[in-house]
Every structure is written in C-alpha cells, then in structure tokens.
Length: 504
Image 1: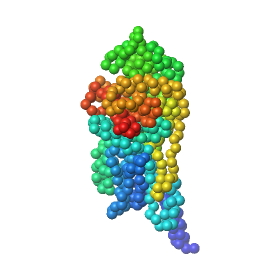
Image 2: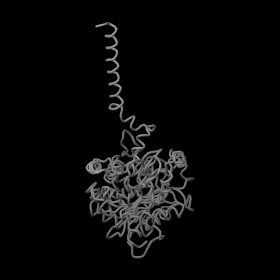
Image 3: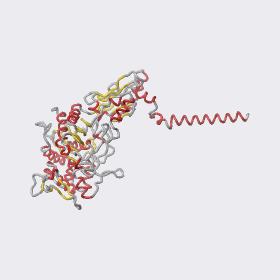
Image 4: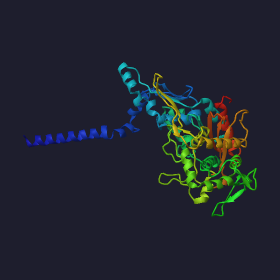
C-alpha cells in the first residue's frame, strides 16, 4: 500500500475514534451538564411543551395551573391568589426554576414521573397530548385564609402552621411577607428576573423564604412544653407540687449573671416563695422553668427534644425542613446544650442556642393533642393522573409512637388549658376549649433594643383536638419592644382554630 494512503487512512481512523469519544462525552458522560445548562433553549422549550399539572387545595380549589399561549413557550404557569398560597405552592419560573411544591413534586407535575409512564406510552400510541399530573395538597383554604389575612391585617411578619393532630396533615402554612408567584412565572425573562431581584433573594428576610419550614427562631417560653415533658416523663417533678422558685430573678449557677421573669415580676400564686409547675407554665415563670431545666439535666432535656423531632435533618413534607436545635451545630449535630448548667438554665426558657421552626412547634402541640403519638407532617393529600384518576393517596404515618406517654400528654393538656386563661382573649370564642402556651423570645446582639419574637402554640378543642397551631410573629404591629406572644400571635392562632371548627 502506498505510504501516503496508509498515513491518510490512519489519520482518518484516529479522527473517527476521537469523534466517537467526543460523542460519548457529550451524549453520555456529560449529558446532564448540557441538558441542565441554562443556555440550552431546547431544554426550556421541552419543559414548556407539556401542560404542567394542577396544584389544588384539599377541597379542589385550584392554586396553580398552566394556560396555553401563542409564544414559543406553549404554556404559562398561573397562580390563583398567589400571595395567599405561595408558602405551599412555591413558584415555577423561566429564569429561576422551580421552588417549593413546584420543585418537590416537579417530575409528577411535568409528567415525567415513573408512575405516569404507562399514560405517556398510551399518549404516544393514541397521539394524545401528554400532560402532567395533579398534586392535591392538604391545605384547607378557610384555615389558610384565616391565618394569612389576620397576619397581613395586623401588619405582622412571621409564619403560622396548622396541623391535624390525628393524621399529621398540614391544614395551613403561612409565611408573611409573601410574594406573588405570577410575577416570577411570566415568560418575559427580563420582567421575571427583575421580580426575582426585587424580592431580595439573598436576604434572610426575603419573601421567597418559607419561614414556616426554612427558618428557625428562638422559641422562648413555648419551649417550656419540652422542659415540662422531660420533667414529667423522667419523674423529676409533677404538675401540682409547689417546689419551684417564684423569685423575680435567679443567679445562674457558678456565675454572677441573673435570669429574670418577664418584667421582673414574682411568679403569682406562690406559697413560701415557691410555685408548682402548672402555675409556672400558666404564668410563664422563667425562674421556675430555668431551675426545672437544671433539675431535668442536659441529657434528659436533649433526649426529650429529639423525641419531638429536634435535630432531624431529614424531615420532608415533602418540602425540605431545616432542623430545629437545642445547641450550636457541630459535626452535623445540634443536640448538645452548651455552657454547662448556666447554659441549661437559659435553654430551659427557649433562649441561648435553642432554635425552632414554626412547623416543629406545631408538631409539639399536635403530639400532645394526639396523646403523645407524633404523626409525620404531610402537605400532599393525593397525586392524580391527568384524567384525575388516583395514582397515590397519602395515609397517616406515625413518626414517633411514644414521644411522651398518654398520661403525660393529659397532664400537659391540663397545664396548657390553665395557660390559655392567661393568653389574651382576642378572637377567642365562647364554648371553644383551647390548650395553649405563649412565648416571647429576645434575639439579636442588642436584644433589649429589638422587637422580640411573639409565639403562640395551641390545640382545640382541648378535649377532642381537631387542629394544632403554631404562630410566630417576628416583627411588625404596633407594640414594638412591648411585643408579647399572647397579644400578637394568639389572635392569629385562634383565627385559624375558629376557621377549622367552622366558627370563623
């Protein structure tokens, strides 16, 4: 063979091998990079070529749908009462992708989920247009509106969560300030990006952050429910024995630092300078509960918090949930209470490094209401095929069957009923028996100059619980530094309870 021809042949073989190698790199090894590349317009067109499925409330109210358009992106995602439901739905955007439930159930909504494979095959054979499935949420529109409207009308920022204690279904999930998903779903990319930037996405107070599950706050005195649970479960104390300090302040052991009751008051109903746990919870006496936490011990308190769900970084509803913690995070663990006994005293009143999501606080109330059995919280009620046939129904799942005993749950309910009598009367209707706990938590480097967080956790009716709620007001309203949970968060929680019981 002519040497020149042989060289050309070898060169051609090398080029073919290189071509095959490059093709394998692009289509196999690096396919995800090109598929997900934001400059890949074909990928974008493919996503919008399929009619995305509905997101609905539990009663069938449509929260998100896709409407046909005349532009290159065939369907426009639209949201009904977007700001009201945005904490649950999230958004679907050309420029910033899918978030919230739009992200958590993305494959089902866009029709690519394996559970819809037979229907996709049927559509291919019959020539029908493929569409995504419907995600039905557990949200009750009446409860959602009651929580959201009350917070907005009162000028509050914060979050509220309502749970059905017996099933774990999330009946309401509110985050204020909210945002309008329609401003992000527009096909006008410049407008969508401007709207996204306008929501200050990198700010810790951005409306795009779902405060109910993605933010944890000092829980203040609502954490006393965990302390009381640990004390009762470990036989450290009982409900009625008068053995806790009623003093207006105590000195943290081994220090010169003092911890005091709200407004420096002596805990009421004291006998010989002491009060019972029931009285201390009813009047939210810090000196008594700090001392009680010291008696419970760090190990028992941390273990009890873990039973309620603190430290769980894998909780999904199916939205991701940031873990609630009793201590600083170290090596992936946030369940060690720092600073010895002084730190234990401070943690006992929900301060120092205790951090809790509103969802976690609602789970605590729901668990007490459910006799000590904690249910897996869930935001999805069912998944429906495009023809509305049921693909999957979500049944109640027990997360922890023995957080506390039924007798401890009964004692806590009795204590919380007494607490409710000192928790304000706004939006409180006659004949509705509520068990509750309020909380007021200082925060920030100059806590005396910053509006405190106001909390309210409750369930009702106390003797036959249908709903458990947790509300945190992080700012707003007219009370400013005088903010207390009973006055700001209490009315929001009771509005949601009234709606759940058909009395709103």
